[in-house]
Amino acid sequence: MIEELEQLKQNVQQVLVGKDGLVEQMMIALICRGHLLMEDVPGTGKTMLAKALAKSIKGTFKRIQFTPDILPSDITGIQYFNPKTQDFETKPGPVMTNILLADEINRATPRAQSSLLEVMEERQVTIEGETLPVGAPFMVVATQNPIESQGTFTLPEAQMDRFFMQISAGYPSLDEERKMMHLYRENDPLETLKPVFSLDKIQSLQEKVKQVQIDTPVEDYLLKIVRATRDHEWIASGVSPRGTLALMRGVQGKAFLSGRNFAVPEDVKEMAPVILSHRLVLSMEGDLHTTKKQMMNQLMEQIEVPLESGVRH
Picture 1 (cartoon, rainbow, N blue to C red):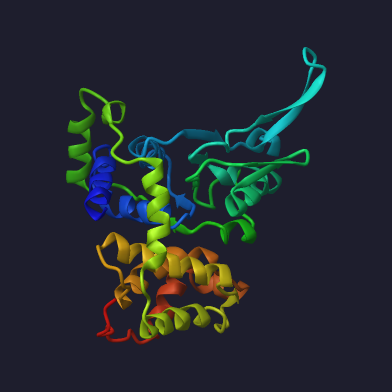
Picture 2 (tube, rainbow, N blue to C red):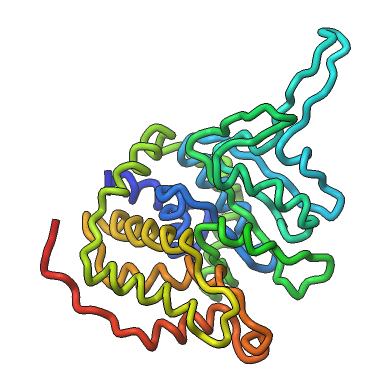
């Protein structure tokens, strides 16, 4: 199964140059049943990444362009009266898919943003009292413009907490950008990308990753990091229990993708910044002195990394 995961990773990398770490983080989010938030300037490959993943697992892909005038029903669906049948019928929205790209999510109003809360947490949508399950696996890949951009609305804390991790693509290096030009000069690699995984296999992996063992020293290290976010004077609201469970899953996912059935402290050290940083709410004083990512890194520097456990399962 690890060899197949590596094949999936390489398949997605065919359309993205120099984004190996990004692809790995997206795969961890997928096998941990998590949702992804990507904050970056336009044109850095966020949409391409989501499309490539959907194609590689033979899943359905839908995209919603979030704008200030978008309505919740444009996302979840509507119930309408059909004059031919003389009855009300339900028309599900674009959330009924495997990979949902919520493009520029912070351009929509908080009311529209909140329409994703139920589907992200419960894997279902409710339309006029009728509850419909979404596809399995289901993953939201949301992109947002830097918060300083004009015409953006800050995502509510409840929604930020439902994103498994927040990552950034960033600009490519000179060599990566040159390679990208050569790759796309004559054709679009996305058009010829072939599936290498099935939806059933993804669901199987989502169960297997839960079996990764976390020894007590690693568990203690994880909890110390989480609890440190709740005691700092510059943090108004620390990581919630949902965040604790997300980090646990992320650590298991990182270990599993590394070919291990046990977690090590390095898994925690690598996953904590991308899974916990966006969940912090800084105080007014904290906002003046630091950023969420800097705050998270500062806290982790103060916590001693344990020696690896000698017990292997």
